Length: 319
Image (cartoon, rainbow, N blue to C red; front, side, top):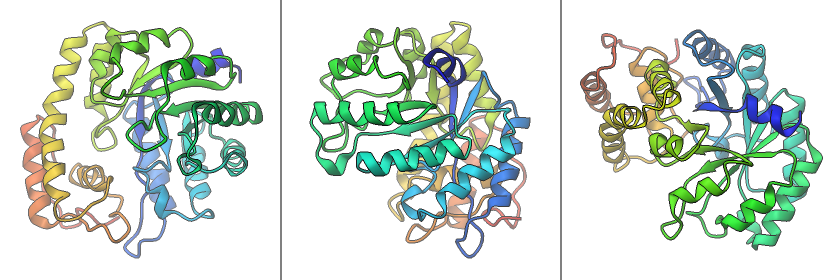
């Protein structure tokens, strides 16, 4: 696909999916397919949403090189072309990244999330060579994950501008270091689709952005689809207020539970279980939420106005 077709396809709400596991911490690909169908039936479809699989939220560091392609394949097959699927590819050297990128492409992914190769301690020129080589090797899109919060993950605005010549680098997952204005994205929107990754979707759209990374869309898609509608109607403040109503209390709750056990997917997986779509817990050493924590999360989400179903005995266990 060419750059313009990819920009048309990859936009809107980027839904960061979690990887389902059974009670033995093994992949539950059947549940992945069922969950994908639920997403689509809820309105997460082409033109409005994109499903992103095997990212950090999808527990990629806990997946083997044999496992993660199965998750991509199961999602693509279940989607049946109704929603684009992109796969994360993680911080390897150029050769191994291209191998993974081609594998994801062959499995039916229409795009990749790709961050700089952090362990190579890259310079800005190294970053450019890396993204150019991957772009030249594939026919699907690349969303650059700006991991400026890690050593060697920072990408300067001028470096981003030079990526505009790379045919398949067509999107940026946007957040900025403290010394770079958020509004500098305006210099890049003519060349890339910009997706907010800093809990500021209203600010992103006000500055010409094209989408945002979800917060808890897999648990209750309608809330963030409604936010998308507001953004596309130019009602940026109203959209941001709706985002904050859920984001602020749930982030506060997440910070509280992280004191007992870490794990980036614990909140999202628990919220899915609370809303009636359990996909198991994170792999150890992360712990599932306690019953007391689950009860507290139910009350937090009810206070946000979500239609939380009655408590079930299998809140965290796959059916």
